[in-house]
Length: 285
Image (cartoon, rainbow, N blue to C red; front, side, top):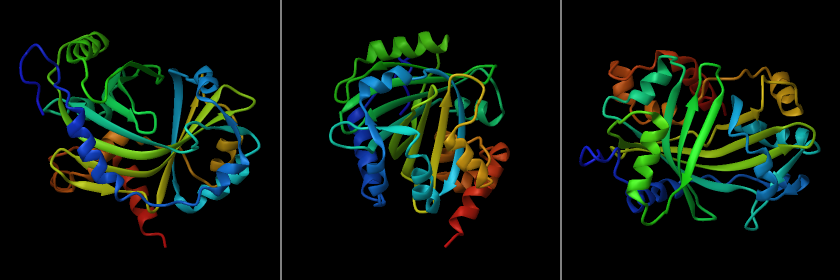
């Protein structure tokens, strides 16, 4: 879905995105979430005070069997987002890149001052945002976004936002659809936010699908400065699990392009340790 003329960085088609995302929703796995009732709740307004748009991120890939033990261990130290009568929320993310996959390669090659461009729809609230994530040379993640209609987006405003934020013009196309369900926790004692992503599935523009939901879930610990101790980090450390360079966009690109990855047409060297970790988890019974 390449931009149709030089005046547009990308052409947005949210109805088409929704069709592709719905194909993934049908495959979502049911997970026992009764443990969530042990957490105190916080509102979306309260959560915005810990938005951490400029932050330090640490990501961890855990086997699904540790989901309930983790949540049990940290239930007294965090509150959980509760809204729309729910404590777990569905996310639909559409990623954009150029024909040469510049954003993917920048991440793979370890380039700092790199970007990800995406459209994210929050299903329960039917709210959408065009977002740009920037990883600077101090390894801090800075996110900027603007509201975007889920039905008829303002193409001109979105293109202006993307070009201004990136600082240059680039023709973008739709490359990957990602679905997952997210739980968001806020520490009661520190400026720390934790997101827990379940039912992670991918669908690329060539209609190839891949899911890692049966064996794994993803934790992202977001803090205002250099990582510091917390009960969540302590649990993960005690299980011998180390932080990983896990990017939903990059891993989804690899997993839905098996042939290209195996043939060497898609560079994957930097992500082999993550791929191996996922393979080991997939072999667990």
